[in-house]
Amino acid sequence: MQKVMSGKKVPGLLLLALFMVSLCVVPSEAAPQYRWKLGIPWSRPAVDENLKLFCQLVEEYSGGRIEVRYYPDGQLGTHDETFHGVRRGDITMGLFAPYVNLVPGGMINWMPWGTQNWEAAEILYEHGTGIIWKATEVAYNEVGMHQLFNIMYGSYGVGSKVRPIRTPQDFDGLRFRVSASLASVRVFENIIKNAKVNMTLETIPWADLYNALSRGVVDTIWSMWPSLIDERHGEVISYYSNLNWQWDNNNVVINKKIWDELPEDLKEAVGKAARVVEKNQFEKQKTIEKEYMEKVRSLPNMTLVEITPEERAVFLQLSDVPAIWNELAKPWLEKAFPGEDMQEKMLAEIDRVHKEVEAVKKK
Image (cartoon, rainbow, N blue to C red; front, side, top):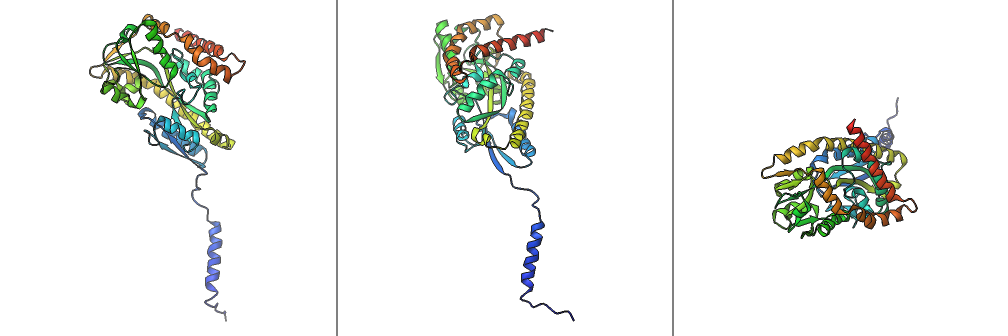
């Protein structure tokens, strides 16, 4: 007859059996090895979809080893607060404008009267090979960051509440908003000096522009087609001149220490996601620019001022661009690229690319 086990032995055997079974159970979903934050300090409706896609693709391409949480609309702080968070590593990644008070070599990213169209921008800012990308990468490296991809918004114009801006003399008596983008500020300082106009420059954060215009703190700004709609600048100005004196490019960057310590396969995964999203956003911005133009034209009380090539040439001449390069860009470029004559190389490449683009367009 089979011997009945004592009640004292059954629990021990049962626990052993449960333990053995647990060894065979594989979790359905492993926890991410890295948990990252991507902070966007502004409202950017046109880029939200692709930045969310970037987060999804990083998780997909990394096999779930990296999880990226997206924080848009300044949820992690102002532009500068988010920037310093990424620099410290408290925030992993962010979308920034490389103002020189934060990135000493950042002026290279958007020297005035440089990039003038989408075709040239695609070449000059190309990841790894574009002359502007190469210099901007060194500038970000100096402050502990690495570029992942660019997001462009196109050309800048000039908006006014008071009168249409068609000549430098139209600035006389106006209060013009400027930022920490020193090369851009120099443009209007030089125009004031060389055209002998009485224009006051007021430094105001980009996020405060709508309120500054509506309250009358300033009456003239630089802006761009998407911002006239998405950030409602077009509601508080009456005239917009398509001057095309500046090209807007922002950089999605990652803390360099975090990047350098990442295994090569995960760097490839993140880079792959970045290339997909960068291309998507570039094509999107290029395509919807015409849509933004039409929306601006339909705004009540808005007059678009089309600047002729001859009128634009006057602004260019009075801006004294060579002096801006020599004062701001050359000292940094000589230090960052010793013995390479980098300024001359950059100017030659910018000129070559634009001539190449124009030749293709004429065919």
